[in-house]
Structure formats: structure tokens, C-alpha cells
Image 1: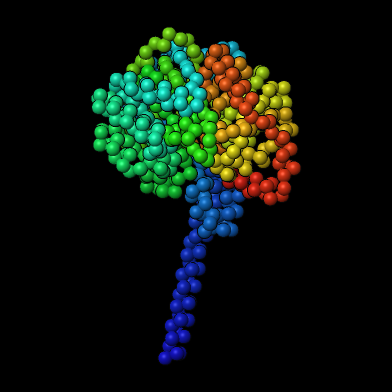
Image 2 (image 1 turned 60 degrees about the vertical axis):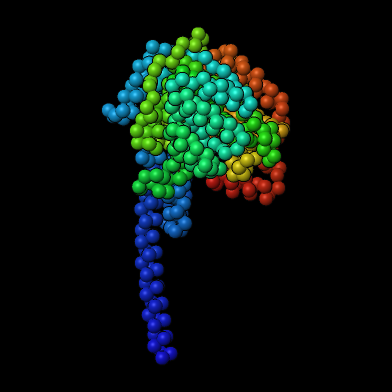
Length: 488
């Protein structure tokens, strides 16, 4: 009996070993194939080399990591303009309505205007009005007032929607719009809005609100496509006015969070033909999730009585050309006097960083405003790794003293500004779906400048030797965190 038992164990061990060898062989082959894919498709040689080594030498961990974090294109998403489809016809209609208002920014920014049009397929327009909305109270009041006056439809799209006090207030306003017969289309990011409750969604849906989560891995073949987020924030009313910027729907954006305290943020209220590209971006998102276009009329926005030149755009990881970094660096390279940036995160790609360094070395006043506290540790620590490079070029960095700063602003010279959802980091530039509004207007630029001057006055300028002066453990955390912000 013992001899039979030991013989059984020996046979079982041989079987398990043979099975493990076979499985490991299969895993290794998959790792090699994915390593070839990484070499062919990674954004930089350094990223291709790192993924190749991990996939071949540590295939089990490398495969899982690559499937989740190694993809730099979003698959399964249809862009307008690639064929004769309802989505393409919608974009053609939008172009025809914008064409009569098409404009070129003034002389020193003409090249930027042409660049923007080439990479997006839509023009800058005149005949717009813009309003700078500072912080949550002013922003939500303006948004709620617009929704209360909606007559035909309301589009809602946010990265975060919480079932809290401001979230419930927003819900009631949308329900009231539905009771008046207004169509409501609601998209939210499934990961960002993890605190949205089922009852919140169900109440809206029961009233006829068409509400969907933006899920990036919903189709067969892209189940690991979870490293992309829809970071857009948009409220668009009747095709005439739109709101976008840094604020999501949550009590913390009104400064009610015990953790963060005062919350500094900025939105923009836009009226005129420049609303239409934001509508086009929503059409693409909705088409991806719902498989059809929303039943929304594409109409000429009502005249605003103002003559502000605006270029609005969307960007995302499905774009054939990486729109966001192209426009961002294009604006930086046009600077003659100043480049001021406000962002909650600073993890720039090499091209943008080099454009800023080049500007500073030309004598441009380059300043970056960051929060004084962290909401996410990895980008917080990662920002310090750039301090020596910024210092060498003469770039100044300040951090706000109180609360948390979440605004996303770019100001170039006196009258070119960008307000939107785009953080000054690699994720916003390459991995997220984002929105931006570029305005070439002296009055609006002055408002942005005044706002940022007040913010800088409430900040402390950083010692950019701080990284080198810090203890080893802090420097190690900085370097370790920076590993998770690769240029793929």
C-alpha cells in the first residue's frame, strides 16, 4: 500500500511538473509575442525596452501589466470623419454651421489657429461670448440657471458625479427639466463616479433621462482596456451654450471636504459657434456607448452680440494624432512674454517639458502653479523629479498655501488662454478623453491673468533645489513614483 501511494504521488508530481512546464512555455510565448507588439507600438524606445524585458524575463507579471498599462491607443471607438455614417454626417453639419464664423487668430497666433484646424478638422470661430467662472459656488449657480431655462435638450457629462448634497440638487434640476419635456442625455465615467449610487441612476432613468456609464472595456477583445478614462466635464444646453472646466459634481468642489478644505477651481461658460465642437465630441462618446447618435438637432447657435475668437476641441486616446499635446505645445511655442500654467499635477511628457525649457531660456516668464497638498500620491511625488530640470531653465514653480487647487489653465502672453479639463500631465495628454477651450481675446485674457495673479499671491514659491536637499527616502519615493508615469 505505501509503495502504491508513493507511486501515485510520484506520478502526480510528474504530471503537475509537466503541466507547469507546458503552461509556462505557453505564457513565455505569449510574453514574447507581446514584447514584439511593445517594440512595434510603444511611444518611446525606452518604454519598448522596459516592456520587452519585463514580458520576456517576468512573463506572468509582465503580461498582466502590459495588458492593463501598456496600451497607448483606445480601440473600438469610432471617430467622426472616417466614412459615410450618421456620425460623419453630423460632423459635416457642424462644419457647415461653423464655416460661416470661421476665423484666424490675430497675426502672432495665426500658425496656431491653422495647427488646431489641421489636427481636429474643425475651425476656430468668431462671434462667441465667454465668461470665466471661478470656484464651485459661481460655477454651479451658472450651470443650474442654464439647465432651469433649457427648452429642448440638456447634455451632461462628468468624470465624477457623487450622490451627495450638490449631486442631489443637480439631480432635482435635471428631473425638473424632464418634467418640462426637455430631453436629458447623461454620461459619467464608471471609475470616476464610483460613489454614484444605484438609486441615483435609477431615479433619473425612471424619469426618462438617458443615462449611461462610460466603460472602456465593454467590447470583446478589449477587456483589459481599463487604463483610459473619460475625464471630460460638459453641460451643454439647447445647442447654444456650454460649460466645461475643472469642476465635477461633488461637495468637495464647493469646499465642503474636511480633508481638502477650500477648493480652488475654474470653469468657462461658452456661447456661440464654438459650442459645436464640444457637441461633436459628445456625439462620439455617446455613439461608442449607446451605438447610436442622440436625438439632438444640430442648429446654428444664437448670435451672442460679442466677437470673441475661440477654438474649442476634444482630445482622446482614440485620436489618430495626439491632439492635446500638439495644441498645448503649439501654444507654448508662440509665447513672446509669458507662459503661466495652473494644474493639480505636473508630470509632463518630454516634448512639452522641452518646449517650456526652451521658452524660459528665451527669456519668457514661465511659471507653474501647483496645489500645496496631494489628492493622489503618485503624481504628487512624481512632480518633484522635474525640479532640477525646471530650475536649470529658469522656470518658477509655486504651490498654493491653503486647501486644494484643481483648475487647469494655460495663459500665453496677454490674450491667449486655455481653460478646460486638461491637467499638465501625461495621463491627460495621452490616456484620457479631455476638452479644452482656447480663447484669443484681450479682455478674457486679462481676466485669466488677474485670477492667476491672485492665486500666485496666495501661494509660496518653491525652492527648486528641494529635491536634491531632501532625505534619501523622499528622493527614493519621488523616483519610484515617477516609474508609474512612463512615456510609452
